[in-house]
Image 1 (cartoon, rainbow, N blue to C red):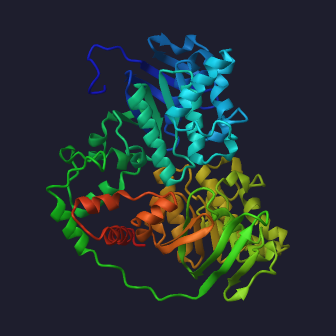
Image 2 (cartoon, helix red, strand yellow):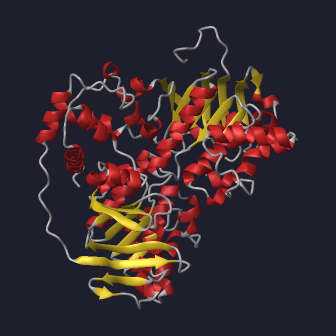
Image 3 (cartoon, rainbow, N blue to C red):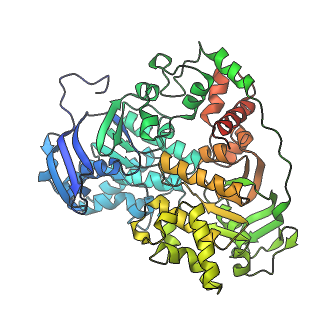
Length: 575
């Protein structure tokens, strides 16, 4: 219960002994849920993939049982009325849902039309409708884009439009299903600030489902629910949660500054109010943090290896008028693991298309081991550079694992005996050997990701480009995928990661190339990028909480502190 909630008040939302089982599943997805949420509360729901957190959200907004069929026992009431007696239209008057995929929620030709959709369905008079749309658009700072197409908007503007579309009905409850998915760091930070502002100003009840715990805790929440295997295993405030072992045991990433405190030997308890970086009390532990920081020795410098892929003053435009990339120059060496970061539209994907030959540069030169590859075909470049898309389902075309991994080799008319040897080898490397005869449909999302990587590795490229390799993954699957890529990297494959994930950039890639408006604005260590205020602002990134922890501990060289944290963690993991 919220600290400001009267003890005798009635819950707005109440689950009693609630169990739900999809008709297509042999076991329930939710077990014996008992939960009360009060008017005006802000609740965060976290849990690993498959834990049931999205199913809980779908029970609230009526998608269960009206769209996703299953068996329900127990009860769920909203405003004291059983939801089972209402249809999905009636429920939409009480609860508005903002999906993680904003594009999937648009129905209008302009942002204004999209916001007005619910009011049009209610036959609201035009004059009244325009006034209401304008009022809600101003609340989310979208009043200057009402005539813009939703698909011309930035990721953050799309989220704001979706939010306005559910607020226009003046619902009691706002439900956000992974609102940070697909957003760059700064836009995600802004999204959390908008949600908080709406909560503060309107007093609406807010429920956020998200696995990026630290990012949501950029602003205060009343309670955090932790769900594991369909059960609520914790219901507590942020300070109590990060002081416990629940996050580690459940496979949820704890805030980075909490990890740093533990590394330094600081006892993380509720007494130091560690739930938010802004409330953290480091008064008694400054010396402990500083001593730990000073004790970390940097790794031995590595001997620089030969250049493997290089761009010299490369520029490109799709229409010959508006430049997408301008004067791009970098040199990536054999065996490096590099992040390519920047806000949506910065030119990251276009750069990878030029490397692979999907597009041709207008000027400049791309070299592989010193040789200009301008005249190499896409097929020839694929022998050197492999690309793994963000969504594995966009790459898979065969029903069986072995056939999918062998596809590129058979396309090149390699003898079947050699194909068998190469496929077996990469299946072993990718941890897929036990599943070689399995249908791909039986695999998890993470396993499908491995199949797509295996199918590229079988061709034998020296360079691997991965677009958002951990998008939508919980911490356990994220770690599995990244440690797997580390092993591939150790075997000599050069890896370029296109990512919005600042944790990934810090923990796994010693070097980051930052794009903004088609130009490289930084090419340096990840720790330098995330402590440079100018680069952060221009590229829509955000400072790591380690930066703030260093300041709070009185350490003047924040960059060195962040780098020492990375060095320490890599040593712990023997990387």
